[in-house]
Image (cartoon, rainbow, N blue to C red; front, top):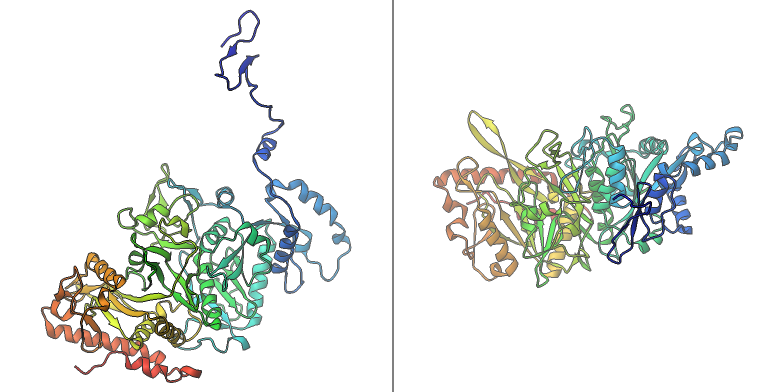
Amino acid sequence: MEAKDGQASWLGTNGYGSRREEDGVCHDDSATPVRANTVDELHSLQRKPQVVEDRHRLQLQSISASLASMTCGIGPKLIKGDPARKKEMVGKAVTHHQHHITVPTITVSDSDLKFTHVLYNLSPSELYEHAIKYEKGSFITSSGALATLSGAKTGRSPRDKRVVKDETTDDLWWGKGSPNIEMDEHTFLINRERAVDYLNSLDKVFVNDQFLNWDPNNRIKVRIISARAYHSLFMHNMCIRPTYEELENFGEPDFTIYNAGQFPCNRYTHYMTSSTSIDINLKRREMVILGTQYAGEMKKGLFSVMHYLMPKKQILSLHSGCNMGRGGDVALFFGLSGTGKTTLSTDRNRILIGDDEHCWSDNGISNIEGGCYAKCIDLSQEKEPDIWDAIKFGTVLENVVFDEHSREVDYTEKSVTENTRAAYPIEYIANAKIPCVGPHPKNVILLACDAFGVLPPVSKLSHAQTMYHFISGYTALVAGTEDGIKEPQATFSACFGAAFIMLHPTRYAAMLADKMKKHGATGWLVNTGWIGGSYGVGERISLAYTRKIIDAIHSGELLDTSYKKTDVFGLDIPRKVEGVPSELLDPINTWEDKDSYKLTLLKLADLFKRNFKVFADYKNGGVSDLADEIAAAGPNFLF
């Protein structure tokens, strides 16, 4: 609007202040003008400063001790905050310490002359900023989730995982069948020094101080030191997030991870077989990661640690899903990939306690983690609405492919990897129970996708049978085609998580049986695989029928029905389940060729027997006869 007669024209404001136009500039005089000479000064006014207290100094001292070099005994000079925002402070601090250059001492290293900024327990918003600005391959997707790349490794590297063998680890499971590959402490310290030197060379490191285990009486304090914002956000989501007050009194961590995954290990170091090494030292309570940026190594490394620490407190650590009914009845779900563990444990009619890792103590059940790590391949809103809705701002999407313009993710695309993942806080699930704890479980459900088609859709297990099938950890995968014939392939994973257990499987099985007996829990074996024949002949059991079976377990219906016993495996199968055709409950009824059924049944039984030989000779302390009892609960070849 132009001024008339040399006077400024006034704009109506409806009582909310006024604006006027002078010299072509529109002014708002309804508030005091902002005093800022530059854009940076203006942005600084947007940020509400945190209160700096003595605890910040103690935190820096604690982190500095964590990053101390084993050879020099000291770490870098640490400063809190973003280096991009503290250039002047860094410059002054460097000047203040210049005397180190001219008066060296034996305890001074080059790292002592530089300053490393500690980005401590940053919020998701701050971590987004760092990832997008500094990490190539990080983008915001249309849902608000952060898409990132894990580099050359898009999955775990179990053959590169090492555990220090020393006087404190005599009770670990070593040898044939064990996932624990030994290394000595000297080699661990070499790798630790390599990781610490790399982290100390950086201008900034990300530090997360968080908890494991929602049971406050048995939780573990963990510190994760990493070089990538992606890793920091991942662990922010996966571990339990402390309150501001809990961080004030956090103190020293119980376990520390040094994630220097961008930097390779030295392949010529003893025990190294590649440029990747994931090393756990239980005596020092430390873990070192070199040569892999796959974030799942941190999650599963800590799970392995919990498999060692918790049983020492008579707490059973479990690789399972867990939910709870409105009446307080808790169910555990065990199952390998493809068995439907996530689908069946995530139930809109029940409350989710956790999807993957739990502890069973005298206080009841508790989730180890503060988040979920869900597979995304072929994800759809119709099939997995809870996971779909959880992928929003704050969620990390690993190795997904998205449209360059719209940023919409194509979950069917496998060009980077089939192991696409989403990591999100558990409160992103609408029916999650917070805090993630519950009473003692009433049902222990072992899931198997039997592609041989001979296991019943559901069977009730004795305690000995529960231990046997828990140790076996069976499912079947479909192998490739040979001369037009597809053969199922049996897969066994002890305790449904062999890659992560630290003690002999019989130890965990004995604890499971003891807790089930003490608290009146019932064991169930549920087959989510094939009926009417093996893969290629029969068909997969309807998910609707499986849900009816799970509902009948939850309601207690299957405790009040009659049972009959199967041949070979000796399983008790119900004669009736509401909503499920009775002829489907006994698998032999669904096979046209009964002789073929019997031969296939014996074949699977033989595979179970062969697998269990690894565990049959276990003798240890008070459970020396337990292996014989468990083995007797396996298949019997006499019809």
